[in-house]
Image 1: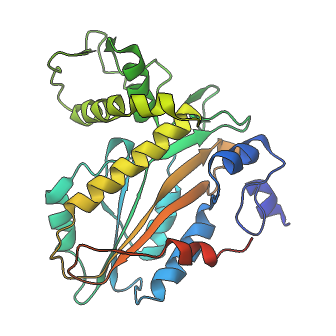
Image 2 (image 1 turned 180 degrees about the vertical axis):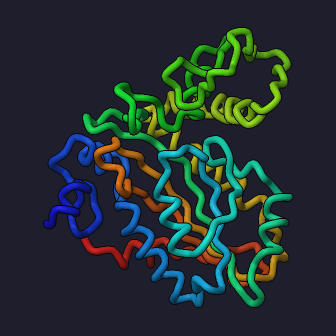
Length: 291
């Protein structure tokens, strides 16, 4: 293993290093996770088999805008550009209007490829749901929006969107900006997305309580399913161009290991033209990976 690989704490297979605390945590909670660049190479080769090319494919993402999500920048570089569908927590807040704009930008006789994912932090000590950001001496939450909503849902009273170490706790929020359970939500200019995330996560709470997974892991997996559901809703059945979908969970690591981070693929789907049904390429993707 060379110096570059050693700094990444991964093997040549792209797997996390099972001798590090963060690597063992990722392997345990996200089987199938590979480093970002490795995932990009493998998914790109797969879609190239189905005639997706960098020149003919419009790439889009539905991911959280957090600055630590650098894997998505690498995806954009591999495919050339990025149309952003997502907002807080990775939910596709641009909706049908956003997809309408996106669909009008697809190259003539080209393809559309959408990557969607929530994200979750794992510290170098192996703590889930937190991350050490560059230039900071304390850990903060990741995904901050999801974790703040989960904190609010647990309280079932009122919230100012999390504690001060939350990644989604802008300094301009005032202490009297609260949501009250069972009452009409206060409309805050510029914060409607978090109100939606709060609603979504409140619905998850019983499932998280029943899950045997770490709560932050269960939250990320449930948010993944919600993002997938919403992505499928905004794609019209009669959209004529081939559409590829790559869905998964982006796993952030501490700044010492953030050269590429990790990504666990959950779905690889392909629709070749107007149709409700997507072909499932997930098994084909995993079959291409070295053990």
